[in-house]
Image 1 (tube, rainbow, N blue to C red):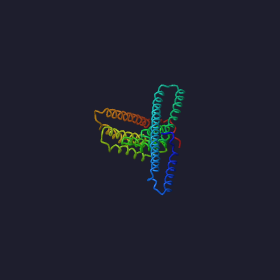
Image 2 (tube, rainbow, N blue to C red):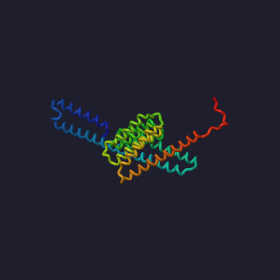
Image 3 (tube, one colour):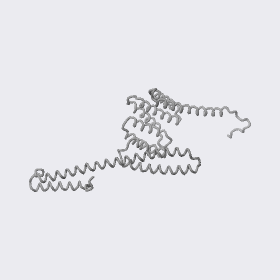
Image 4 (cartoon, rainbow, N blue to C red):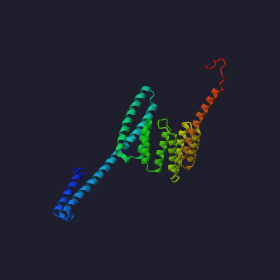
Length: 294
């Protein structure tokens, strides 16, 4: 943008137009029929148009620069979490683990604060996936209220069915978590919306996988909150969606095997718990033990 052109120039241009019109009126001749006045008017309008185009171009450049900064911050946040998980596996000394955890968390909070500031400045220019990263970080910090806002912003910014389905699935999971926001009815509604969002797609493999993924997440949410019959039914539906994928698609085998493994692990734990409880019930009473207090 021309450094000589500033937003205050607009007011100056308006003043010049007013003076030109007043001068023309004094000479009792319409201003646009006076060559000198008309040329001055054209020059002023051209200056105004140039200013507006330059301002718009500068705004676009600012938005692109901020989006690039936000993208870099979010990538750093994700990389920081991966580095944290990998490094913590190698640290055995409790003091070292505590120091490293504190240092990495401080870095993460700084990056999060910068990212939130940029997102506020970008307004409607933030992508759904960018909201998703911040929302999940808020969940990790137990900042469920802010996570809910970010997930809803993710849904609002979603441009396709996959993005909408993802946002609904995250919201559904949020309402099943042990937090002040827990609301099973809202969670079930959002999980169902996650599935319905993909039903309007072409029925391709990835659409089926997304519906299966939503059923699976919903099923585990029900299981973890004590609703076993509902959970078992949803996990069976998830397996059905996965089995509908093309046999040649490696995603089918991976999804089926992963869900089967998790279901078997859950059943094994349940069997162990049932056996332990049954052993307690079958344990003979100690006749020498004093009777329970009345």
